[in-house]
Image (cartoon, rainbow, N blue to C red; front, side, top):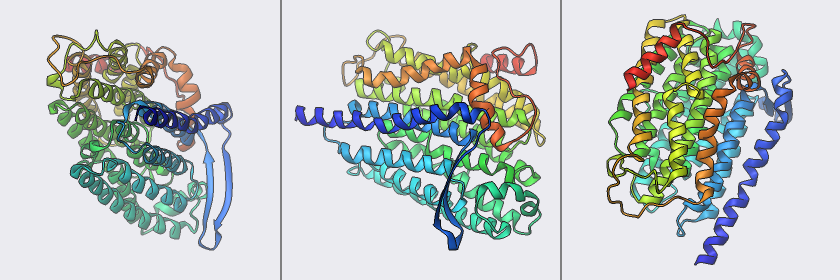
Length: 495
């Protein structure tokens, strides 16, 4: 049995070459894309129906591709030691990497019908991943719920895409961008908008479709980390960003996204502070983050859209680190209940350091990337064209609650007395804490050198769907201004 388990772990580690190779390839392309080059691959597929396999790598797709492949690599390495001996690892890694490739296809598709194909592939494979522990009734039930909600949204999205292609007489995103006037003055514009919103809201757990996401916690923790930090739930966010230059800028677009995103953010933050299961706490904070991203994508100013792309990176780093750290705590102690663990600092120092670094970024402490993201969020909220007071208030309250949650995650599991746990705690193997430590550490590194992140990642992403000439710059200190005062208020309220 030990030999078989060692062989299975080796297969898992070897399979991590797939996301690592993709990540390295995208890193090699980074200088060209940051310089403004758009890379395209075009393959005729079903030409009679206007369906082509057109792939594009620009700043937006590259940013998403890097996060997907980076988390995919660390999750693969982590899962090799996390999964129990009884798990079917061949099936697990097949689903995992199939999902990764489907997500990469989704964010790089330049044809909305081929984008829809990849969109549905992520829906189907996520169903298999959430229900991976198929002997569990709750896992099967939660997987069906996620499939029904996101699958129904996918059907609405297909209707929206067909209407959009009918109005513009093309399904290629690169051509649709030049036909915005025709699309926005069309009688079916509002119908297209409604269908697209339903698709995005169901996928990214926006109110009133947010209920499925916490239930998806029945998936193994590596899958939860992958789905919640970089992949499935970010698909709706990607869709809104990609369609922003085509459908965005109208009162219907802005009003709907600002209100729905703001309400979702508040619901997620309030539910997170009440939960006791560590994975559910993180699930509710994901809902909050998705709401904030949706709210800022409702804007059309450069600060608002820069805030969305910056917080996208902030969230991916701290959330993947915290999810994997929670998996370590559960794996090494036998419980995820925050009230039943404590004093783990001495027995699990690397996990503690990774968790504290990620939590500090989540709370927005100075020197961490989350602090810069929070400053830009407040600047973006203050410049919203519709409901700036609402956006600013929501951002302040949600961030304050997240600061409190971050404090709980950093303090309660690791400080104080250590209550008895089902398993005597000890540090996890390096393959498990490497990912949380790396991504938690990046939250500090990116906070110290934000100008590099802004130049190479954030600015190219924003320019790819918002070609404004307004300056985009990330700095550790912007001076004494309103966003800084709001950041201080956030930390004070959170404390």
